[in-house]
Image 1 (cartoon, helix red, strand yellow):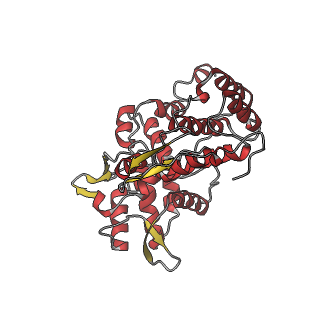
Image 2 (spheres, helix red, strand yellow):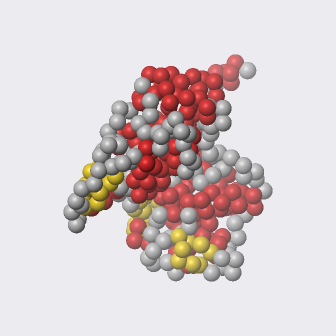
Image 3 (spheres, one colour):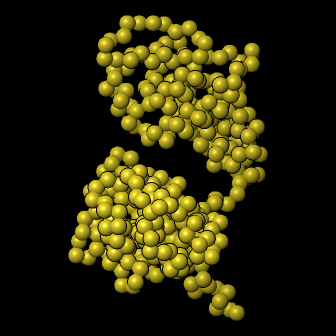
Length: 351
């Protein structure tokens, strides 16, 4: 962490009181932004001001840790560390937060600044301080930044049904090709996020007369692990996700553990689960092999490609959501709108 200037005292050097700690509890010293960042990253519970500390039973702290995903905790800690390196302290005034946003407006996207605000808001609530990020000055500055530097939200290029079939034609029948064919077809047919796809295990697959039933045990919108089931039917054409998945399971002799695993250049299958980033790499590599431009495609392209293709085929939004797990039509609207942009086009009726 960078040292703060002399006129901005480092709160982590503040003196704190001490008390006896029970054997089944942890004493959390709230000594400023460094302590808050460290606690958020580790999942510890802080519920104090800079002048005191609180004793938290281990069981309570464990539940607090589980309330946030590991990635979220890491993001909070990183954002607070950046704020401290800039010269920020907690609690921060609305003027200080507004200046922080202004100084980074030209170099960082508004969406990034908005995430920084969310982290600062969490930190203020954590130490029970007034949340200055919700004050009118901060809101006005962020709105002004969006007006000046706002840009269209980037999104992955959809890997539509037609493009997917072209890619599949160029995939060989070696071990890696069998795996990639199963990954692409199942990822598309399920409208899965890449984390959901690589999270599949043998126990999550149930064979049915109509195809396979996949259990998604946890996802981005299901952090509590309630789970959902997705049906993947047999395809009418030659590119069948069910047959492709079974071919991969037989090829790799997978009965339990991770479904999608690393395959080395000799065709040997490891027990190591593919990462979410690997899905993006596989998509891009297979597009290039098929002679296509891979720029704009990512791990989200399978999911967006399914939604776009289904909307073009006239599938109702609620049936699409049943497959993808979207909570509402709001997130689907942009895909459906794009897919129907040439349907009954007003210019087409005139020219």
